[in-house]
Length: 463
Image 1 (cartoon, helix red, strand yellow):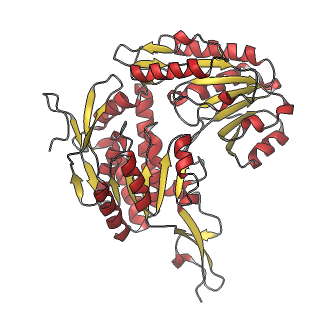
Image 2 (tube, helix red, strand yellow):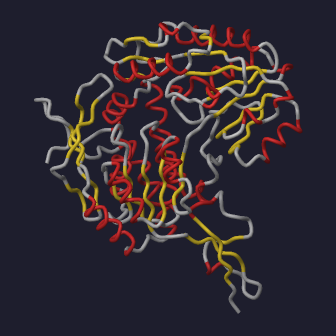
Image 3 (cartoon, helix red, strand yellow):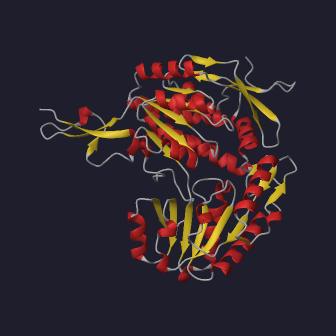
């Protein structure tokens, strides 16, 4: 079986990585770059194979914790240094760049962050463990006993989106905790998950420890039903379908916002918000998509638009483009959506400047800035997969109502009461104080610590 394009242009073959090794199926899907060119042939897993794999994984025993940690370190090195599936890391970056739409430097930055997530998975997972809980029953003190951190199940299904390579971080922590993981990669960007699983196997993890099973939406539902627990990522439709399940953790949507107090309208604030809008190609759930301004919001939007246009200038047709590069048809759909739904918003950047054709194919999107007159406008909850931000006025009389149901709020204010109110509102997942919404070091909880969902505490007493 070919694992990479031949000189004649043969497509890269991405087989299933099952509980019994690699397997190719007749059901396949072609992975295209944003320029429309075919890049890879992706095998799709049938439901029966999904069921068989998850069943076998549930019956398998996990490696010992120390061995898992050691092999994760080795896998991190192999991810960066080895030819895996016949593909070098440099060639892997090319493939990811061609399908993800991120610029070349960001693709490499995020892919190297994946290697860090592999190596640091045990430590990151352990940050969720309560102070009063131990890792194993052998550590439980005699007499009084202790809480012991234990898995809620044995198998985890990870149904991934293709927003960024670092979407792998959550399931890697599950692997570090002893779960056997079945990964359903994004069919738009399957390369990262495939390479991670190959690196883990090259480092000595058994095939039953982690599988890579690309499949259809129906197959993904089967995977989530068969595993003890599941991760799934998506928008409102995914949240509506799985949000009420106690065994499935839903990632997304984001709706991250920034609030600026009247005394913090400074050039430094403007620079920070511009970064929050455009970092990660503006396509992540932590990107600021709405700004509430206590003061002259029209002036602020004008200044923000000027700064973003300056940052995008002379970049959009290069390998360092600011926004994401997407297929032309996707760009037309998004611009058409804006024209239909945002007709009452005032564009601070002309709509005709939002889409820039790229010489290598596809279209680079953004930046876009719109002003609204009402902080409660429904558009304040609209997030699009490119640097697009809505700016509205805010006063203390508006309270936190316009800020609810957000993944991250950056409160650029000295108002301690407001910060406390945001912190205790259950609909606000994370609160930053004068820190960009995109800030993360890998150790901060995203939508809770991953371990909060994966683990529970049991009392263990030994006399």
